Amino acid sequence: MAPSAITPETSPERRVYAKKSINEDQRSRSNSIAAGTIKLNDGNEIPTVALGVYKAPNGPETEAAITAALDAGYRHIDSAARYANEEACGRAIRRWLEKTGTPREEVYVCSKLWDSDHGYESTFNALCLSLEKLGLDYLDLYLIHSPAEDEEKRLESWRALETAKRLGKVRSIGVSNFGASHIESLVQNARVIPAVNQVEVHPFCQREPLVELCAKYGIKIEAYSPLARGNKLEDPTIGAIAAKYGRTPAQILLNWNASRGNVVLPKSLTPSRIQSNLESFDFQLAQEDIDTINALGSSGNYVTGSMHKSDD
Image (cartoon, rainbow, N blue to C red):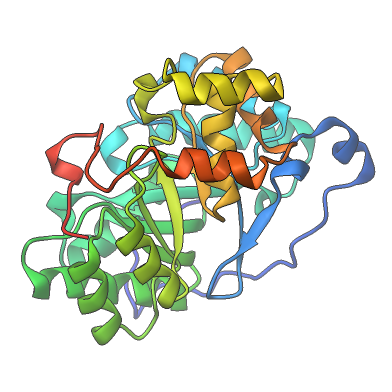
């Protein structure tokens, strides 16, 4: 049962389980093996493809999509307090675990601290609420959704995440929508370096300076909007490469992101697209095609609006 309160003084340590391997029967049915995992700078591993649930409703449609994703082989669900669908995510995950007998530690669950909850105590309360809504005892990853303008408040939130990690309520901690100045400030003041930075990255918004800075500190990039919200699926260059490989443009975009070592977060509520997205990682783009795609982008072609823009 999720805790009703989390404080440094009262929160118990979570029992740590050894991560079990997916058995051979699951391997034969699951495409997630092709996607694999990446080791984070804290030693934990994260599946390289996640089902994103931004704008998904808090009801049966989202539960069905998550169930379809887990059945297909996804082992990573990415939600957030801001998405207002943690209850549906939690119901689907818990029911699937019970139905299949899969251990909890084999499904990677992420949520995020919303902007209105910055501050040390507020962060603990927000994490507590997310755990209660999800019906989980711990999160695999908890992120600061966006950097607070007040640097001290931002650092207070990070200190709360560090404490939550130490108490076992969160396995890994990270940030989202942090630009270069935010990363530098945090690294200089943190006891724990962020494990990930979840930002918009796709061939038309590659953000190389930020990506390189994160790599310097061992911070993995989680790429949201990897399909550029569908705005570039008709791009002729992507279309030509897709035809060459007998793949869809979406699969080329996702594969390109994964080829850069990023965690990829496509979102869909349609089972056929959920399956198709997962099949984006069982082939390898030739270097010449990667170079062609690399030439498409710059750092400024955002599709997610000004709220997520930051100085790189």
